[in-house]
Image (cartoon, rainbow, N blue to C red; front, side):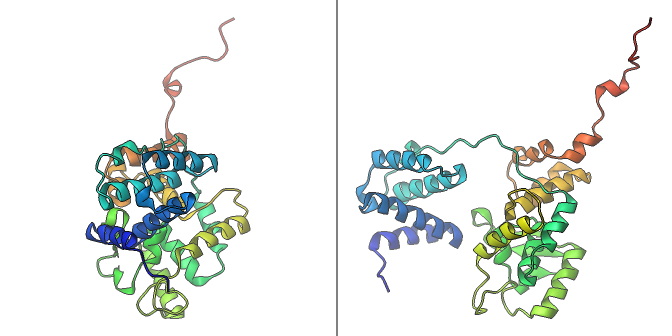
Length: 286
């Protein structure tokens, strides 16, 4: 086993003290490790100009803006907290988020997509992700005890920002989970990995999404987050108040939720044009 360096241990301790989720910790450590390997030097010997050069390198390689910003978060934490250089983080810029609309599946496409997943465990996990608007890490991290059928809620531990929260448990999802439990008999983790000692790897869900989208002939890039976007859009189209959707999605700002009003085809179709109220004659009087 390779011994952990004191610097990495210190960073992990810093993240643990601040209650960063295990997924975030892994992401940050991985990002700093790649940064160090790029320059073949210990990261504490690299400065702001090296950070800038690394960002330019990542952009030239076509990194996505979420991927770049994740690296920025790791670098800002490493320099600001672990190294104690408080003046550096603010000088490491985030990438500006492109004004793109999220991919959304129609209700029929959600059914086709889920039915194209051949594995019972993976299909149930993705169904739960859609029905309870869970992130991939939240879906795979569910335990049997998180399902509260009496109160019809699901407890999500260590969600985004390390926060615990409750999400809705629909009657349909409860029936699906009970059928899955009778067939699979999971013990502690709702969706266990191969040896039952831990949850299924999140990469399994990512891979299943790619395969199912192709098998269903959707012609769209579908991810677990696509199901989350679809959930919000479908609620909006069904008349759910946007402030309720904000709470369900765990958004701090209503502006984050409002983006779904721009992708809801149902709302667009239901919106009456001002023209419809005008007594306008198409054919001019002769």
